[in-house]
Image 1: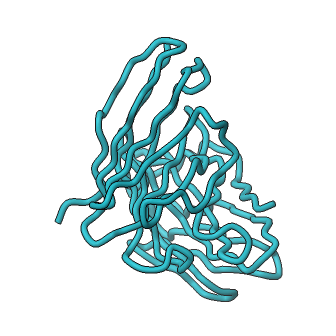
Image 2: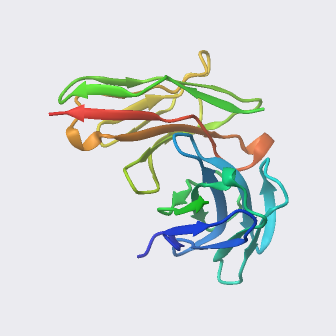
Length: 116
Length: 114
């Protein structure tokens, strides 16, 4: 049973470019959350998707957007990249059901994004 | 808003030593509390959780008790191993005020020497 998978593993971009990161949730999960983890910091919540809609959003600018597909997989898009966007981007999925129930979140290994 | 504060790190211990990593929180509702562990080059793994006051979460020899009176959720292990070396994150989710999103502390780097 595959866990949460993210692609790509590493990515290098330059300022001003756009990037798309991908996430496949753990089998049976229908809720996907995205987090940004800067070096030496704890993860920061970006947004959460359920039933193909953004249900919650953290304190991130509109440059950060996402999508969830009918098969529950998700994408994170970041436009107009800044140096400060360099981070590990983590995807987490949770068990089937109401996203407002307190099911533990399962994390992928992340995508390391470097901005030059 | 919600926040989590962890003890400043890093922490370096010898094998078989006793471990405590302090965690305190601020929340407007009645949060659930979690400890996650991150090994080098990997994502976060749920270590243990507690969903209400006085609950004790435990896993792999690690324990933490939800203390509402002191707003704390300290992580303890009686005898650490080299394989416990990792970064440990305390986190909360507050369903009433912010849904199931996780709010994390800064993390504590643990190094265990043989």
